[in-house]
Amino acid sequence: MKVLLSIKPQYANKIFDGSKKFEFRRSVFKNTAVTKIVVYASAPVSRVIGEFEIDEVIQNDLEILWKETKKYSGITKDFYDSYFEGKEQGFAIKVKNTKLYKKDLCIRERFGIGPPQSFAYIR
Image (cartoon, rainbow, N blue to C red; front, side, top):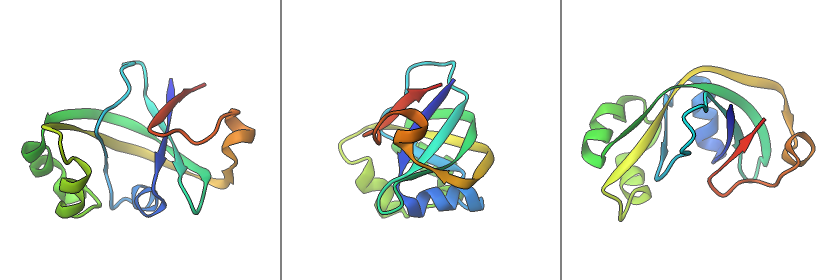
């Protein structure tokens, strides 16, 4: 099963160039059958650009999570702190086997949906 995630273009690009190996989320999908993430690069790109397999989903206290992931976080500590403001725990989706599409896809044409606020299950 796959999930479509909206990711800001600068971070999506880092996932596909290998410098960002963790995608951070305040909450994640509950379905444990999800094995792949399809990446929707949000505005101004507004296209589905690729996908990756989930190595693991790490849930932890924010300080511990940062210590475990900071080397390949692809973000600054300040951004991390502001993103998780008000939370005690967070999630890091560990990226493996990225596949950047040769041609970007229109989300409506390919999946029949609009951009998800957080994520959407897809087939």
